[in-house]
Image 1 (cartoon, one colour):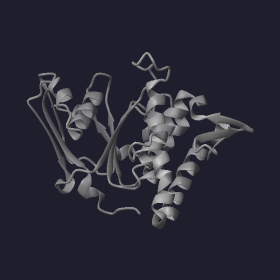
Image 2 (spheres, rainbow, N blue to C red):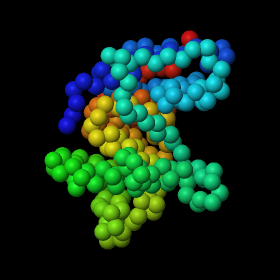
Image 3 (cartoon, rainbow, N blue to C red):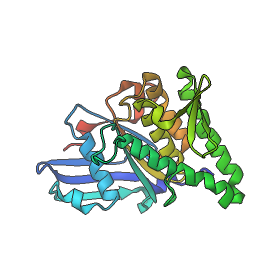
Length: 262
């Protein structure tokens, strides 16, 4: 079900005073659908996204590090969405020396397989059994995800499916590949797509910091379109250096960081 009241549950204004002790961020009338924040390195794009997410999560300890004078988020209709996510670009070794997985692989495994709460592909599939009245809707949404993944992986001949063990796997010329066999770019793309897919068409906010890292140009060009297909009710706030992400008709959604910093 696609909801029609997204404008009432998306970010409208961001007002932050005293960033690094001397800069202010003022971003008003934020687009309720797509925002592409651009600017040179060091202009504050990542800081802006970090502070927005920290305020959404009520992470006061993180916010205190900046010694801000004021931080205020305002929403269309005054309502905060239930779901908000921050996808960072990373494929660094885990800080936990007991684990050999990268942070990217850990995040991807979490959204695919964890079953302690609702946010995972594994749990979403279980809705077919647990919510039989939604079984057809859930399966159609999974089919859409697989269609998008297959279209973006087509050049390497990989197709996605679900194994007998309920794991996502890929077939490539008769060879079965597990998710951790994929390249970092493929896993980064899968993390983005699955995270938005799991929003289940609900009003949400997705912050993404340089999602183009490790992504082929052809993927960058269709990324926003495909995220919008997976959840048209998700407000996208993307910080990027890539002209390819903007190239397919999203130029009017570009916001220069220099217009936000006061």
